[in-house]
Image (tube, rainbow, N blue to C red):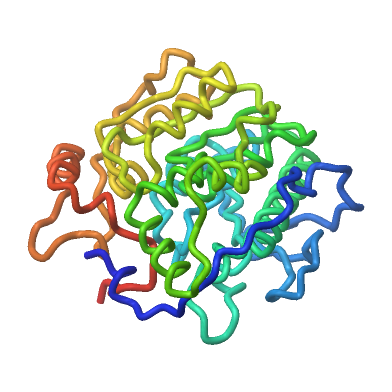
Length: 344
């Protein structure tokens, strides 16, 4: 079910900020000592904001068999527990990659007391939003630089809002062999203007007496968050989007791909089913990681299941076909990675 609209929320005024580029693409500060053993790792964030526990954090899951390199996995917005991306972790580790699962600011153990995971990341105060993105991008860059010190290939896989932060981060100077960006919300102005999430934020701003501007002015205000204005540094690049995505419309990913001279991969999925129940996108990511231009792994991937918190009642959509049927109802694409009902 869509739980976001059932939560009582305080009005939040829209506050614009500088339209200049984000201040997170310059030289990195001295790197901290990187992870030594699998498990949790943390270090002081390269950007101290005072808005939460300012220690960057990740969890290292080792490769299955000899390691061929490291993939930084940047999860979706409002992820409530690491297990939600376990399917991606298993895919990458099974491909011989050490997986570094990033904890973004304001998420999981970095959540402020009394808040829900991810709640403090997105704000209609664009100064706060800039700070959250700048901190995340710098932390991604530090992780990529630390991964490069280990040897082997370095890659990034970003999911949903994590794909937007990842897209911006790979335009800086750190060495990266490949990047997969799945369902990137690459046009925030479009999302705030035309999606259900956007309508909710528009109502909050109107109730606060400071409504969002119309689309042209809003797009100008949000221009610093557009990765298409910069150039990626990844050697291999995958941009994937769901044709039925009502959260991060495919048109935004298509525009980003055009700006970067990349052919996008489009799937008959909504947002949640693309992230969690699409065998085709997993196959394409596996091909990206392995450098297989043909896009076909040697062995078929197992069937996928939506996490229990996204299944409806007694209907269990355990196959890509079931997931596509759920998309066709026009409902599952509006689910959120929030702290809703958890599997017992």
